[in-house]
Amino acid sequence: DTKDRAVDEDRMPGPREFKVLKYSKRGGQRPEVKTLRVLGNQRLTSGGQVRRAKPPKQKSIKKGRQT
Image 1 (cartoon, rainbow, N blue to C red):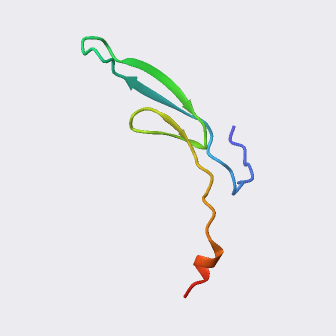
Image 2 (image 1 turned 135 degrees about the vertical axis):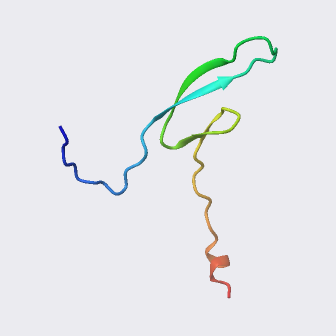
């Protein structure tokens, strides 16, 4: 069943599942495995934290006009 859907240009990415390994402070134990669902406006850092997208900073109109 392949349905032909209209391609929406301004679609956002959907949630993704990531496997995160959390190593314990003591070395002898197995690392804790978590599956994290990361939404479209979020990202995973290398440390395993979930960061949300920041709103774009306002650009100065005056500084852009200077030549």
